[in-house]
Structure formats: structure tokens, C-alpha cells
Image 1 (cartoon, rainbow, N blue to C red):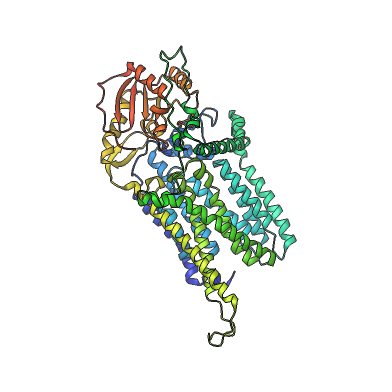
Image 2 (cartoon, helix red, strand yellow):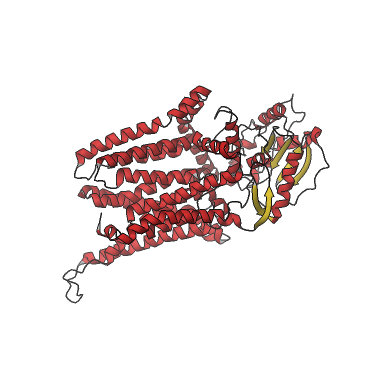
Length: 635
């Protein structure tokens, strides 16, 4: 521990370090209670978590009977929660708010582990609590910070006791096992960091040989423990017959990444082609109907000019030019928060890597720890980057990465600020009196280095401040923005008891009543392309194996699949959400699925429109005159 760290170990600061976590918990509980009942997103992941958990409760098997999209721990605890409380939307919200609180605490512990300053460490922790990431997906930031916390203590922080170090290595292995059981891709990335740290652990240390053995033993036992945590799930999978599907998640992740990477490259190449040569998206190909089921032959949809990635119907990354040319500050802030963390990460990795290498060559364990600690936290944050940058470049997925990234920024600011102050405070050669000091060219280099570090520190602080201004204003980032303008109560089944905006209350009630009035408990209600909350709040099961579909995932066989499912399940009610699910007109259901959309108009009764949601009722279930069309709101 260096002088700066020791200076913060006074009794007063030790007492603050013990008290601060409790203050953060109290702050989080009060803050989240302010908007625990605010808002209801029909296309949010809360509906998916609720519907899938209810399927698991009645014995459906993961992967075989119901699509998960993630690994089993994403849904098993929710099913356990519902066993205690009954299916409850408010219980589900508080369950995820607990993860938000845990993430904020871990940010505090991660930053405090390096700085030993409880007051400074509380700043990024409060920011993480204020903007905790998209609600109902708060596992992601939690896992990022959890791995940062465990890995830094296992392989980076100096320990006097080998036994304590090995215990932390085992804990890090357990963290990997838990991470895999939530998200395999995140587990893979964190495992790479785990192994890299195990290799670095003995390098540059005076007790090299002993640390080699300790690192090998800790890494091996940690990985064994990560595997052992899978045994209860594997036992259940073998007993219930979903073991093969469970295993294929792990063996198939490379192929999945390769396919998605190919799509990204195709999208980028599409931008460089002249419009005449651009290939249409796969989802716009003519769809073959199934004659015995459908009496119509759907027309081939018109193929629009494809001049950009967005024209293909995918969710496009915001252009770099929006950092300057964005129409509003919120647009500029999102563009800056998309690209500035990338720039900061590159600079930090290159400069920190060089400094780390120098510390290893000098065999300086103190300097090694000082450099490796923020790099480890940054690596855990960047493990969440691919899902945002390449697959869903939007505010919700950015907010997940930014929770651990805020911890990394705080550590980078701390180290750079301290190094900059050291440069400026370097003693003058020949004494403290400038008149008697001898000229030294290195003094100028130190001043230049200090100025550069100060500029980079300012850039990191600006990145955190700009992101906070974005996240606190966006409901999709999990912040209190959800409370804005909500005043009207709305109630439905499964514990849905929330406050919504006045303009939303009427159409939500109309939609709820339309579904409940034309279907009976246990009957299927089809919601496309993605509105699982309708199923959850009306307690009507979905016939869909995968609750999510859009123009980029449907494929050319969607028409046939749709007709077969309609013939088999015969849902009395179908709800079509006509929103631009990927922020472009191509991704409206009626544009990318004209065949199913026309089939519904010709075979079901168009009952009414509630905001963007169009309700179709099977003719034999019409029980009242068609409801008046609600006023549509913009996307």
C-alpha cells in the first residue's frame, strides 16, 4: 500500500468505509421506491421474464418447450420468486431493483479496493444506482461488476495470506460459473480475463515461483468450481430431457457469433454498394403460403431502395456525425456516449498496457497492481460492449455496459489524476528555489506529461457526466425518468398495479378489456412482433415458442410458420404492434410481414386500434361491437 492509500486509512475514513454501503442501500431503496410503480412497457423484457417464469412453473422444459434466449438462471429465480409471491409484476420489479442496488454496492467496493477513499468511491456508486441499466435485464451490469470485484481481489490486489488469495480465486471461479448460467457469451469473455490474470499473477513479483504454483492451483480449482456449479442444472436437465439442448448452448456459441459477425459485415458492405446493386434483406423475400390452410396468396412485398444498414431493417448504430449534428442534446449525448467510451478504452488499454509492461520489467509489484487493477475492471466492462455495439446499439444496452464502465472510469480518473499531480509537484533540481535550481530538460517533459494526463482525466470526467445526463433522462436506461408525467392508475392481472401517463391510461384499459373480453383463461393470445407484457397482464398464455420476432429474425418461412401456428392453436385474439421495432419503417409488422397481416384482415375481425396495437378477434368470439379506434401516438 502506497503513501496515498495509507493517508485514507485514518479511523474516520475507516468508519466512513463501513458506513457508506449502508447509506448506499438506503439511498437505493428510497430512490427506487419513487418509481417502483411508474410506467408499463408492453414490449419490455419484464413481460418475457414473467411469461417464461410462468411456463417453467407449470413444468415446461427450458429450450425444448420454451425458448429462453439466455441461460437458465435468467428465469429460474423468477419462477422461484413467483412460487412465493404468485405471479406479480411489482414483485418482479423489486427483484430487479435488488440487483440494481447490488450493482451499485459492487461499484463502490471495486473503486474503494484501489483508492481506499470511501467518499470518492461513493460517487460512481451513486451514478450506477441513479442509472442502473434497462430494467428487467439488470443481471448484465451486475455480472460485469461482480466479475470485476472478484477478479481484482483474486489476481490483482496484494495479499499476505496465500490461503486468502486462493479463497478469492475460488470465488472468482464461482463467479464465472454463475455468469455462464446467466449469459454464456459474457462468461466466455470473463473466462478469458480470468486466464489472462492467472498468467500475469506471478510476473514481476519477487516470489515468482511460489506465485506460479498458487496461480496454477487457483485457476484450476476455480475453473473446476465453475464447472461444478453446473451440476445441479445438468442433473435436472438429464432428468427432464433438456440436457442436449442445454449443452448445445455451449457448443454452438461460436457458430452464433460467426453468423452475427457475418451479418454485421454484410450490413457494412451494403452501405458501400450503389443502390442498384444492393441485395434486399432476407425478410423481404416473397413468402410461400400453405394452400390447405390459407385461402389467399400473399403478394410479394415491394423491395425498397437499400442505401444504408437502416434501410435493411436492422437496428442501426447512430452515426458518428450525431456527436455534433444531433438535433437535440439527447441525440448528441447518445452519440458521444456511444463513441467516447471506445476512444477512452483504446487510450487506457494502450497507455496502461505500456505502463504495466514497464512495471513488470522493473519488477515493481506496486506499480503493477496500480496499472492492472483499472485494466481488469475496464476489461469486465468491455465484455458487455459487443451486445451493444454490434447487435442492439440503443440506450438500454448502452446503459448495461456503462454501470461497470463507470467504475473503470473512476479508477482511470483516480490514477491519471494522481500521476498528473505527481508530475506537476515534482521537485526542481538543485532545491526548491527556482533562482538556484539548475535547468533540467526532463522537467519540461514531466510538465507535458502532467498536462496530457490532466486532459485525459478531464475527458473521462466529461464522458461520465454526459452519460449521466443521457441516462437520467431516459426511462429505457432504468432511471427515474419512468416517473415523468405518470399519474393515472392502471390495473390488470398478475399484480400489474402501476401509474401511467394520462394519455396512455385509456388505450391500455381498452386493450386489456379487448383481450379479456374475447378470450377465456388458459386460451392462447398471439402478440406480434413482441409484446409479452400483454400476455402477462391478461394472464393469457402465448402460443409462441420464442416471444420475440422481427424483420431481421423472421426468415423467409415466417408465413408458413404463422399459418401453421394459427391452425394449431386457434388463438381467439391476435394483437399486432405496429411500432417501428428497429427504429425504421421496414421493421413495422405490416411492412415486413404483409402476408400474415393481410391474412388476419381477411380471416379475423379487426376489432380496434389501441395506440399502435391492432386487435384482431376470431369471428366466433365477437361479443360486442367493434371498439372505436384509439388515437395513435408517434413512435
